[in-house]
Length: 427
Image 1 (cartoon, rainbow, N blue to C red):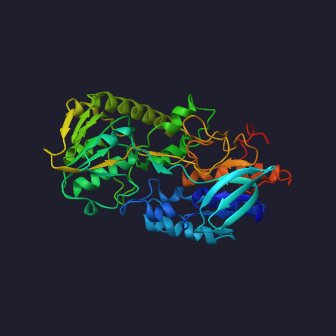
Image 2: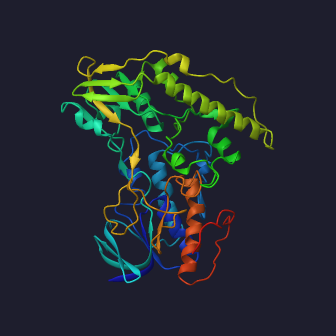
Image 3: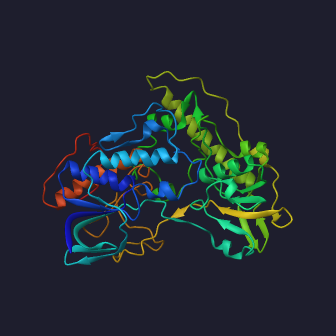
């Protein structure tokens, strides 16, 4: 049995950021990764996908994007190369090809059984990410067996799909990108839209993420929002990281020929029924976007950088006053349904009482009720950007310092650590 002070589960952005912080504090640890570094980016992403955040936001502890296109968006292969470089930029004790079978308490420590043997760890960091498993609604079971059902994790390109049209369920960042790509390949796409968040790729001459960063919106803490559970479950912005920096929204899809419907309501074999709620959801998205842009306009007055004048706001709901509420897949020549309905997290190997009724980890800023067990990389863990490459580093620094105190190293500070939001985490 091997022993370590800290065992990190997951070798993605969260696991590597934590390793970098622990290494800086000379705390013994190991990182276990079931596949290769950035495995999900290697094997669970479609071919044309790019980061939604501009390259200048690829900032991790002790490392950041240094390429020639800070305003561009990395492709999947470039993201993999970025994390490979990060993993070799410091002596990360990384063990790839090692899956975790169970984590259980063992006399004040934790017994971690893996495919490579058993570890005894004084602390464990769960850094398996927020997009662990596709979330597919129960309605999927009522689809005709002849219809191919696909989740984004398994989608690669339009050419890999059967011939015929495609229904995309879900209109957040993933859904609109897939609908746009598949429609452009010459297939008829129908997209089912529920609650969604509009966002222009650029506003007043700057990328929308630049605005969210400058306005402090990404730094919002769990204490500063009205209902953090609602914020954690909010859909992602309708954004795409494209070389042309284009905005993709429902109006762009409509003009391209995509049929836009309301929320999927019922399934009966090859017949789908949609809610007559498209005006309601698009109007709600209009209101939220108008509120966001007003906030950005107010922030513009405090900026030292010059920005362009505000563009006229155009609501989209008038374009969607009528939408089909029924669809026969056979009559429409549709052979594929893509469930772009989000992700969930599962921890079948966690033999500790740390999950709530929804199966989500109990934690406060990544500190769980089980002393010595931490979580990293979850949505809105400490701030709105906790699950971003640009946000996970700050959370990792806080948890690394918490672990240092727990191990009896006293209060060790990592250079560059912002301590403004640490007071609520007690050792």
